[in-house]
Length: 93
Image (cartoon, rainbow, N blue to C red):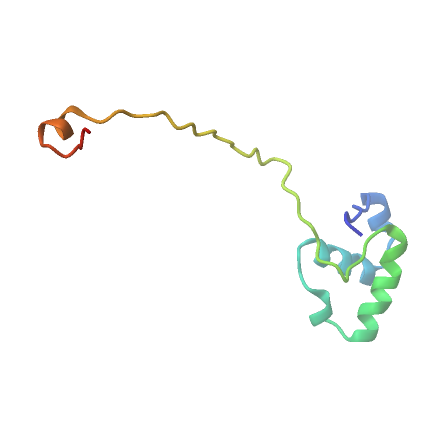
């Protein structure tokens, strides 16, 4: 499952209190598997799977307000400076 579905607010309120809490904790990026017993984790997972959410996978947070800055750097050829000729640092055949 590449993209997790976001549950609309009305659907969140229709969930039971325990499933709602598990969904909101998962949405914040908390590992639920370490917080609850195995049977409870899989019961909550089975309750949220019909809504398109798999709490076994980490939540993919997306910051839609972030604009990535891309800057292209181009190289410009530079000639040998005059002081290098004056000091004899450049070999001329």
